[in-house]
Image (tube, rainbow, N blue to C red; front, side):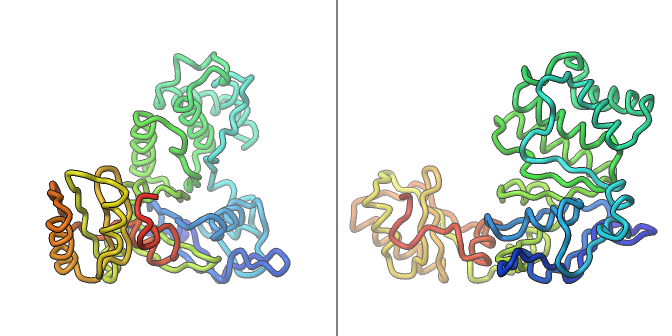
Length: 323
């Protein structure tokens, strides 16, 4: 990634945030370079929202520091906020306002001159294919249109760093594809994107690097592929039988050498230490039960597998696959 005159886009050092006896963020350190599309992952309650709230000036840290393009989020909060904006998970557009009025109002909040706001608003509406709807009230917008408008509102001050919280939650497939393409496009223009998401597929598709936070601590930071390669204990076998019944699933889950088994569509996804042994065991099981194996594969671990290994959550217990 290219360096900039003022260093990292985001720099976090020893950041802590406590609420009484609860340590929500426990001494994390993190650097995001200019132009990165960075994913921030973790289970509910892990500290993601608290971290983002500190970075965006909503909350004050208990200890440590954080900067946005060299501007301390506490001591130089005005300059820090000038460099960023936020796309929240829940729409912050006013339903009774038109798309145009929402953008003009947002520009005024950020101190953008009215003439410049109008120029940017038109450009953004055209870019996001909303210009023909500029005079329509937001309450009549679809979820996808609303999400595009919220992103446009977050770009009205031309931020260098864009925080995005679950940008595709609740959208139909076509809207998800559109929003992901938009995120990639924004990043190609040089905007640093800090993506908070539970969607591990999305993080794998979009992000240059990801950090996984759990119980307030960063447990891993790397590219998705490097994280998957490092997860040596996670070995996967995928198998499909001609008859996929609960009894079949439970039987496979109880086989020797199968650590976990989960139903994924028409497949059983098996976690094992020894894929070759697991395949032999599954073949014997199929012969004994009179089943035909219609598909079997040994893919590398997914980002979801890494996430489960590092956080200890999300996996099906052995013998409970598909329940």
